[in-house]
Image 1 (cartoon, rainbow, N blue to C red):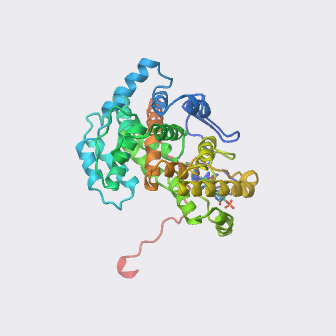
Image 2 (spheres, rainbow, N blue to C red):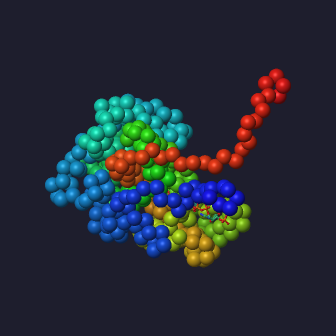
Image 3 (cartoon, rainbow, N blue to C red):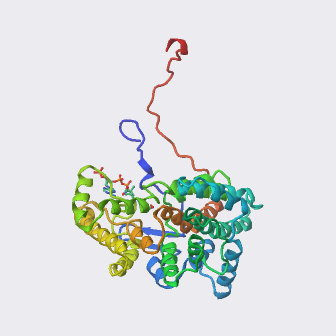
Length: 384
Ligand code: CMC
């Protein structure tokens, strides 16, 4: 309580701890990130998305037989129920893809016999299903907008390969699969970020995993969270040419506009994921595709300007969403799929947190300080 009798309010719950977890450590001071103790750099160098999904869902790395079994389980769950594929095919082509994805997950629940079984075993089965099917659903959204319709998943491929296959109907390029797999791994988990927290809030009422994931997808959509990747690329397109970058950024900052893909509630230094993605941009500088080269130059110019202006002085550095645009453009992934792909990569993190929270569940119900009137006189409508 403060001197004026008003409780101290932490806007946006900034700096508030609400639970304990060993899943993920975000060290915002030193710019480090760990999944179950493994640094993101170690995982990016040595692991892959499927193995990281196993790690997040089980709390340890698999041995070879366990990984193979896990991959088989994911492969079996890859096809979407007909009703979900139909919903994606029939949804308006101008609907927001995150709205389509959120609706697709809701419909998945209707055809899952485990939907309302909250036992540990059922939750693990649903997690595997969701990890596998979100990537299929995003591929299907892309394929349906590409005009090739719903391409049945190819179960011989992993999440990244199958996504490309469903997007294009063609066997994907091995290098592209490797790059997308790394992007999925980098986005797989990030502690109690807004979408994970909203999933936990839903789960904490003892609702179910599909409801929690639906909440999380709705939360991820916003441009202050997962939507920033698409917004950052749109800004790069608006800048147009590298030589326009300085004027654009100066005008935006003078107009108090936020530069998408910069800043973070926890990192007050360079986001380690952005650093890893930036390595790819160094390769893209030599790309044969002029659009990719141009976007890459704009991104690197904007990064330098923003760090000079707001880096050390304000703690505003590139975050994971800033460099994704040029990378995904190089892979032939349309911008409207960036945030849905973020969801398809964050799903193991969402499920891991929900399952962990349920082990010592407590309803999440914070307080708000009432600053309005009391006993307001009710005036009949005819006299208002
Ligand atoms: N560009 C310019 N100024 C910024 C930016 C930015 N990207 N981010 C923060 N600021 C300024 C902000 O205007 C404010 O200035 P002042 O104190 O003068 O009013 C100050 O920094 C604090 O900003 P805030 O928004 O109150 O701080 P926050 O802790 O709520 O910020 C954030 C976190 C991610 C919402 C914010 O940095 C932001 O809006 N960034 C742009 C959107 C973005 O890139 N989101 C992705 C986040 S990382 C991945 C993910 O979660 O999906």
